[in-house]
Image 1: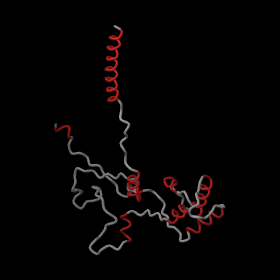
Image 2: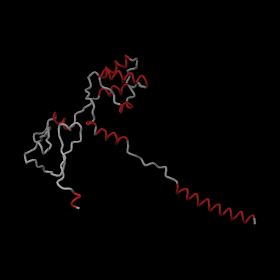
Image 3: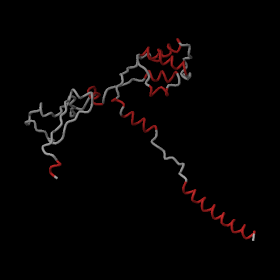
Image 4: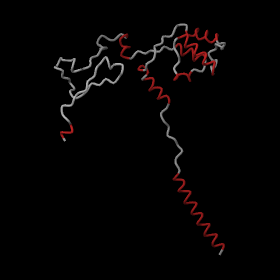
Length: 199
């Protein structure tokens, strides 16, 4: 009888564990994490919007490398381009360079500055704050191309050429940017009828 009981309970426990192991397998969450966007894509996105940022323009001097070398020598740091900058030395070099050049390194680029060569490269790089439209003013354009730099925006109070009528009578002119709010006044069109009353 004991052998029969052992065999029956052994069979039941085997079936039970087999069933629950399978159930646990399907209940587990996957540990695979779907990859997000790459950092290079973020860099490309930020670079394409770079000219709209409020940055100060910087035109590097011709002797930028020698000025960085002088700063490093005054702080008793080796002037070799591969010299690592860490901690207080890095702070002192960057602080002195920002005072000499009147141009400081933004927080978003601090992690890239690791050596004296990186500092020299940064202070040799110009910062251009000209928008693409403003850049067209200094370019030699072909004779069949004309760019209107001071464009006009319709406003019914000032534009009376067609009796204050616009080509888009139901659309408002909204100026959302703080920079152009005073230059180009917007207006909101009042609805001629209530759309709810038509229903």
